[in-house]
Image (cartoon, rainbow, N blue to C red; front, side, top):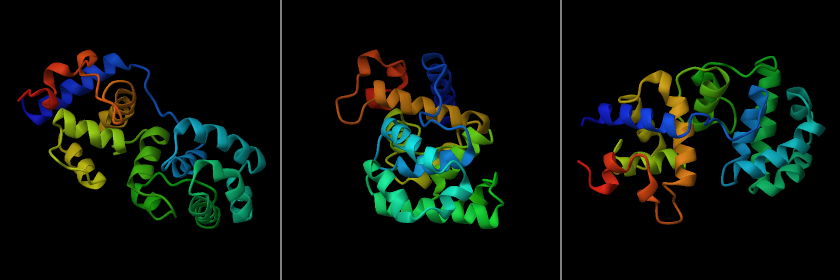
Length: 212
């Protein structure tokens, strides 16, 4: 089985296993997802979803958040950890959106990367979940599972994993596959405990199980 064939089989099986998988960060606007994904660094999505409720209640728009004192943002987002740097990035990002992009989140990958605090993971998430364009989000679950399954080999660098996956995954499948890898990584192919290989839908095609 080639890597492309393996990728297609993984896509098919995970789609059947997690048909309703989607982004686990709550959002109803692109800029809110930008804020949430920045807060999600080293923090659970569940906690972020709670914290941003208070943030968005107080600052309901890009302009409001752009004009908010960084110290006030930091007080609200503190429970997500790394409050000072996250608040600084969020403030700078909202200012740039307000002043240079007319309160609109760009739908161009390279333009998204110009925003403070936005890396490839965040940009891909926006491209895929907001604008429904081809995207591959290489978070920790995606990287771990891609290596275990055999989609990539001994590669931990997020960008290199992303580039390798682009070669074997149909562009239109990337975004949903990455969401399903998150679900599978949390429920079955876990990081902090021994993976539950006996109940894994990929058991018979997984490199970790010795399948060639």
